[in-house]
Each structure stands twice: as C-alpha cells, then as structure tokens.
Length: 285
Image (tube, rainbow, N blue to C red):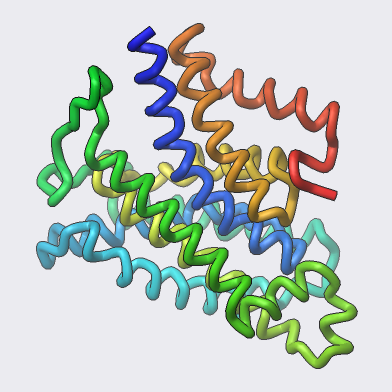
C-alpha cells in the first residue's frame, strides 16, 4: 500500500510538469489552430540553455528560469515572424510540415553542435528527499511541480485579468468577432506563440534540475504533450491541466502495476478509449 501511495505521489508530480508543457501547446492551438510539432524541441533548447548557463557561468537552473522564459519568448517571436506566419494562410498540411521541419532541424542541429551525449546538472540548490510518513518526496521533483503550478496559475491570471490576456481569449473563442472588435489577430498570434514557447522555457529550467539533457529529449515529452492536449480537448487550457495530471498518474501507476516498458502504451490506450467515447476530449466542445 505504501508503494502504491508513493507511485501515486510520483505520478502527480510529473503530471503537473506535463500540464505546464501541454498548456503552452494548447494555447498555440486554441488561438492559431496550428499544432506545433517543435514544442518538445523548444523544451530541449530551454534545458540546454539552463545547462550551459550552469556550466559556463555557474547559474543554478532555478535562477535561469527568467532567462529561459525571455529567451524562449524571443525565439518563439522570431520563429512565428519569419516562418510560421508565412504559412498561416496556406493549407493546414503546410503548417504541420513546417513545424515538423523545425522540430527535425532543432533536434539534429543540437546533436551536431552539442553531440548526442546525455548530460545532467549534478550539484544544484535542490537535492535530497523528504520523508513524510514513509513517503519519499524528491525535493527537485517537488519544487519542479510547484514551479509548474505557479507558472500555470500565473498564465491563468494573465489571461483572465489583463487586457492582452482577454484579447487572446477573445481570438481563441471567435476570431472573426475579435477582428470586428478591432483586435489585431496577427499580433495576438505572435504573442500566443511566444508565450507558449516561454512556458516550455520555464519547464526546461525546472526539468534541468533533475532530468537528463540531450538533443532528442523533446521527442518523448512532445509525444506525451500531444496526447494530453487531445485528451483534455484542443484549445482548452483547463482541460490540458487536468489531463496532464491524469496522464502522469496513469503512466506512473501503469508502470508500477504492470511493467515500466508498457507505461506509455497504457497512456495511449487510455487516450484512445477516451476519445472514442468523447471525441472532443474531456473539456472540449
């Protein structure tokens, strides 16, 4: 029973990180109707940025969070301005191919420049475990999950309370009505893509405290993110948050109850059953 509770806690912790990653992806989809296949590779860039800041300047990953957020925000702006915006009025297939191409380019460019070797940050401000009534709580993973929740809540408040946030939600709900009301949808597209990229920058810094860093790390996280976004409902931020936790718990418990080799298969089986019953996802319309 104690082991089951331990796995449940571990599932919630990784699920909260998945939620943050999926929220960035679903924000981009909800506003732009573009599925960003390079989302995982942006995470990889964020993790490497934290790693090199630590190696070259001694900056702990926790302190690199704002640097990551700004850097990935600017990267997202540039990618949208010079690449994504060029195909926005084209067929959906062109948009998919472009983001898929960016994904392949970033992963292989990183492998060429930094080699495919696995790296890790061994000595950070976060280390050790807490023992709470027999439950082992990894301090780096706990802080990562808390940081993910805080970032997600910050985004919720930004969208609900600020003028720009409300404009983003307006475009997400009805683009044509937003245009009639005078909202610059091109600017909102650019901001949404940049904000979604900044979120994975934050996640990259948090994950760098305890996760291996290598050029193809984005592939595994990206695949799970697509599953979470579809499970929660495309464009639903609340759905992505809930689905992220659900996937984390199912993945961890599935690996514990059955076999670690099957944990991702169990997640995708759950996804297929859910969309078969409710094709629009948990929170989609």
